[in-house]
Image 1 (cartoon, rainbow, N blue to C red):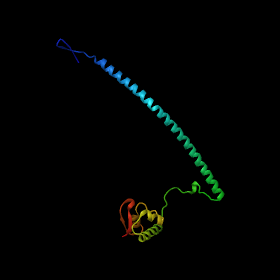
Image 2: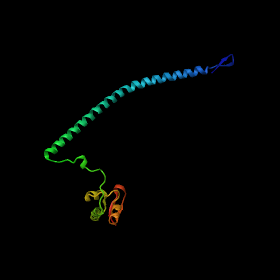
Image 3: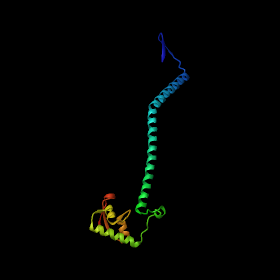
Image 4: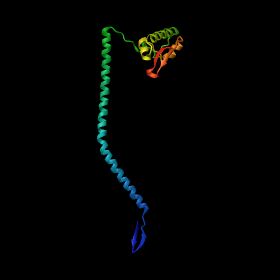
Length: 164
């Protein structure tokens, strides 16, 4: 701003250093006020979150205890009823079972018979009815195992199968 004296305009000198210091002080004061206000707002939320975390820890502990009790009771019932449960070593390695060519051909024949009897069926229906898993594609499975041709219509879960 300029100062006027009897028609003359005199420039006002501004101390830039003082102005920058004043701005920095104002920013620091505003940041401190904001930080204090945010702390006041978030403190109850932090307390509530801590209570919920403690409650979840207690519930997890209780759940583990109940699961342990269920396993114990289940083992006791199996002992009373004379049922043997497989041990971890008897369960298998978790690897897929490789089927022989004869088994795959027999499965292909089962699938083919079902598709022939139920044209327009879906893969899930065939799997449930024949108890044969033919991932990823039934048409490819049948072509690879016996050279059967199956016509597909639709895509993904809505794919239907009929004999070609």
